[in-house]
Image (cartoon, rainbow, N blue to C red; front, top):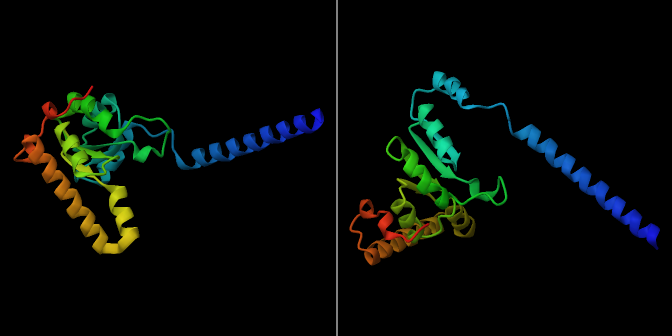
Length: 181
């Protein structure tokens, strides 16, 4: 009996090691660890339009984006798919606003599910909010008409949130609307 248990444990360890090896191979093939901020010079040589960098969650990276000549950044954790336990986009926004808020445009992506979420993000300093999953789910569930309804619902929720907080304009939304730490 003990031999069977030992054999099962050994097989499980081998299977886990093989799965880790497959995953690490995938990572090596899909992520270039040699990329640095200096590589943006290459992009700038080919593109003279606005440069927006997505996936910034750290105030130092935000400062580096400014130094690299970006006109905007998207504060985003890529839906949390890239690294389990990474901080939410909304929690990363205030320190980034404090670090670079007036130097470039700040957009927020991730976790925006309602008009109230839009108001919160704007109150914390985002100029634009992206709603990737909401429209994708609506499109899958009901096509273009469902996307139109989703956008109207989002707008109505935002208007209600603005009325309830006394904001006549989205520009009136500031951190004082929120109790955040």
